[in-house]
Amino acid sequence: MPRRQSPAHWAAVTIAVLSLVLAACGPQQGAAPAKPADTKPAAEATKPAAKPTEAAKPAADKPAAAPAADAKPTAAAAAAPAGPAPAAKVTGGGQATSKAPANKRDLTVVTAADVSKFDPHLSTSVNDITVSFQIFDNLTTRDPDLNLLPQVATEWKTTGERGWEFKLRPDVKFHNGDPLTSKDVKFSIERTYDPDAKTLVATIFNGIETIDTPDDTTVVFTTKQPDPLLPARLAFYGGQILPETYFKRVGPDEFNNKPVGSGVVKFVEWVKDDRLVLDANKEYWGGAPDFDRVTFKPIPEAAPRVAALLAGEADIITKLPSDQVQRVDQSDRARSEGAFYAGLYVLAVNSKAPPLDNPKIKQALSLAIDRDAIVKSLWRGQGIVPNGPVAKGDQIGYDANRPPLEFNLDKAKTLLQEGGYKNEPIYIESTQGQLQNDRQMSEAVVEMWNKAGINAQMEIIEASVRAQKNRDKQFKGLFWSDPTSTVQDPDGMMWRLLGPGGPQDYWREPEFDRLGAEARVSLDSALRDANYKKMTDIFLEHFPWLPIVQPIESYGVAKYLNWRPNPNQLFQLRKEVLTFNR
Image 1 (cartoon, rainbow, N blue to C red):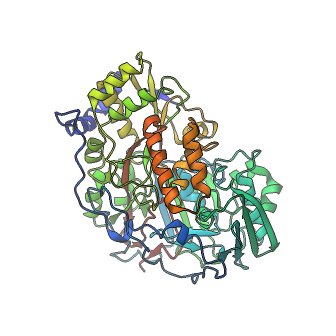
Image 2: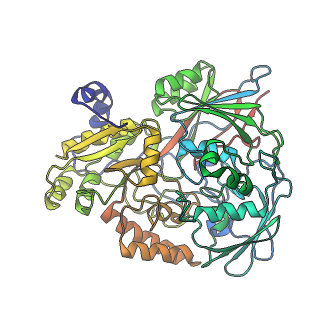
Image 3: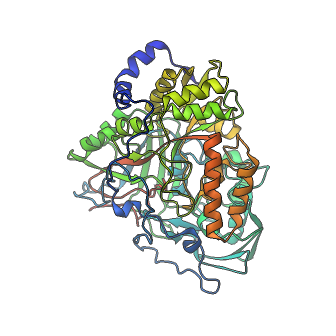
């Protein structure tokens, strides 16, 4: 249940954090934030995949070759575009520096929040996809360098202007022994946009007109309009393949309680807020993982999470606080691994809730946030201030010449007056551990808004409550979201979430919708780039999100593990990515 924070709570909890954050604001409140230090993150972690129209579109007559099952990740094909660079380097290189304990076969992953849903079509929460991408396979996937690779598919090719043909591996089986066939792919993808299923991924594949299955190992997609990004879309949200026979036999509720996929691990048990146990899939088509069992344990508070890592009770922890990176790196047991996030941390806005239906009020809220102070203090410089809704690293639509979002307290106060603000409460419903630094950033933002004369209130909600509010679209004001650029293109983030019918469809603007719909089906890169930049202009007038930071997301990793994270939060346990140094 949400709980309102008392004045005593603020005095006790926020003073240490806010003294750092507000001190960083400096005396000139109207000044633009300082540019982060010009140090780029490690090249291997920041290179995005090739342009979506290239990576996702093999030649019409030449299918994309599948790598061997034990293929290693390759270097990315293109450098990141120019623009503001993170203030500090990405940590880690993925290599173990010590030997694993003798006979160690179990893996423990400590997360910042528990799972809310196992059905991959009902949640895109980072804590849920951390698990669902292990239980389920997709047709395609991405490695830690964001290269697009085959997974259940072995090859694909275009068939005319609107067709895509995928060939499937013949040896893939679900955990219950049923073979994975083209019919399961058809069932799974069609379910995503079935209105009766009420999925959270309904807008991802709604450009598909028909799915045909001429045989068990062939799937043919025909789209309503040309879609060069379809193979890339299939690698992420909504692309997980469900077993049609099992799902229809047990129904959606039982499937969510006892999920069956074809992935590298099998569901064993889940004890809410305590543990999730998964066994290695020894018959996995790509080869068994380098462990026998993995246990996920949620620990929302950062201090005990880090303590578990340093005590040897955890092999990997998520959401390693920036101020703990050095401590972990100097320890005998663990190291940090960081990835420059291929997305943004934003305060998403229910723009239907007054006074948030007034663009001037939202502009004022944005101007009253000193993001540079947040990045420097709470993130220790491990990130950049965004310049709009498009993540740095996207191949199209990112404008490197656009300045970072402005902090100007005087302008904020003026806009509040012009917008007729009458001291109505404005709520942030914040999680603790859903995103790294979410509660701390909420406290800082509320304090900044109070200084601008805004009646800002914070309520802490559990991850499961947030998930339900997200599905029902029942947030009372603002809430944290970490939109991921799933195809390295604004279509996979801004348009997927904010477009008509999207999970965060709290606001509509006809020209924004027209530009997004046109860009989605266009093969003209220049037109798409221009459209997304115009959409950014509209976004910055209406602020359906308040972008806060594009961070370096950090993990704590035992020194005996070879592992590094994906920039797009696609947490992977397959043997190509994770091994013990034996």
